Length: 286
Image (cartoon, rainbow, N blue to C red; front, side, top):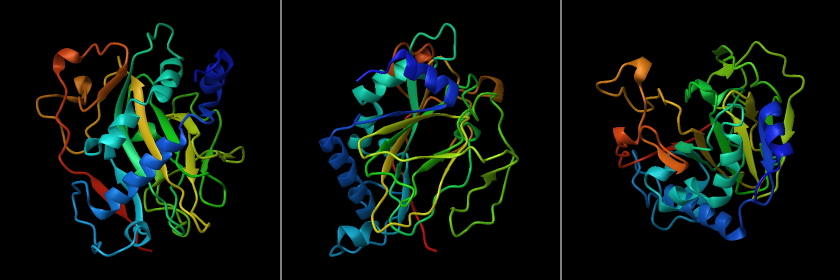
């Protein structure tokens, strides 16, 4: 399932693109089953989960907000990093704003959002603040495992807010009823924000500078989503998510915990870094 030239133009102009039906029912079942494996501690976690052997899947998952970097330890999540449908779209949009981009794409992060009933969303933020890519090619691929609605805390975006490549200032928010504890971007007019309601199996692609947020899940069901982050494979990645990188300074810092999914990796001669042996599962207690 490719994308049209008009869709590519829409992504460049608006900063996001919805592709419906990109994932199959079996894809979604795989991801949903992986959520339970993480919640039960079947994969290595930085902190063992407080789950007893006889607990139900609901009891195991109801306090899990997200899993950070699931593709480091899960073969399922690793497979979705290189999902053919995702890659086909990414090779059209990731560097579409760059005149001589050759279609090369690499992945550096994944997050598995579980978001059970009652759990909070995230206040306004820009992903580029956390994952710098230098050439503004960061793109998130947000895979809806469940229908995402206003009621259960779907994404909200501010169309076009990525265009000038500006990182807005951040500070604490005053909405603990709606958002987790992360800082909120501020200083802009949010009147034009729109909800991105999508059916399960759809994928929302969005630029790293696009302002976006999500509210608390007010429904009785889950709002699960697997989100991968990609960028132009020719872009340096001056990012140290776990610690500083020995022997490199900021001007040439290039995180090599990456997976090339399309095209050439011009920095392949540097090798790739070994991924950590465990991941962080984020729980939430009001």
